[in-house]
Length: 335
Image 1 (spheres, rainbow, N blue to C red):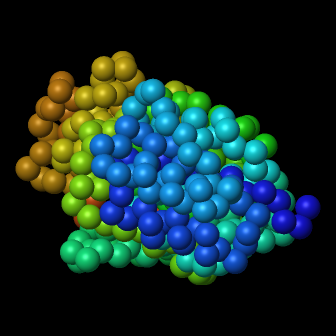
Image 2: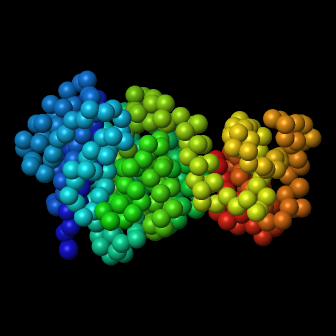
């Protein structure tokens, strides 16, 4: 199967302004054996008109409407109607580089099932890109360049949501879009990781990621920080938590406190450490803050690090390395 059919799942909601470029970039792909499953998610602008116009011009573009609202129901509907041997998704406000599909397909054909093809991304905007998004793209591309995306999965979503491709059977094995957990892209990244799909390294920018003020990831509550932390904790407890090993939270900032509160609610015991002399010895939520060196007295601890400062993270890493502890085995950065 040298040119397998690729199903491109595209949820669409009020992106009339950008939809032409998105669909045209798909039509302009050097790889031609694809189908688009575009689901109109209750758009109130003229997005549906744009979709219908393109569907009339190209029979590979199929349009659906849905009763439910939200990106997950849209993805579920698109996937239900897809026929491709390979599956990918696309955001309706973004642009594909012309060779995106070709490169991702070739990587999958070369490496076979059990692999996840990913590509590098680049943000663009007529309003300028904020430093936070630029840092995220650099970090994401650094991981993708080496294919070690999972090594920092607890920090942030390590799989660019509109720039991956996978065998249909592997996606099915990972549960596809049969979930109600948001952010949906981060949840799927964890399920790829959980089921052992190997990321294929990629040195090319394949996807142009548009940023603007009304973008869903900026405005919808499902992409608020508390949802990200809930997903991190859910999968940590499922995949890495070991009740026979002491659990440690390192850091007493906002994220550390939120995490501590969630663990207390779940009745999961833990040690709470920090290097802030103003907090050491105090009680928060009934837990005493301990000096970070206390960790060296524990037998095979597992540590969740909630310290965001990069310089402090390096100090913490060096300290834990001297204790022969390993990233993603003994300690996990949650930011």
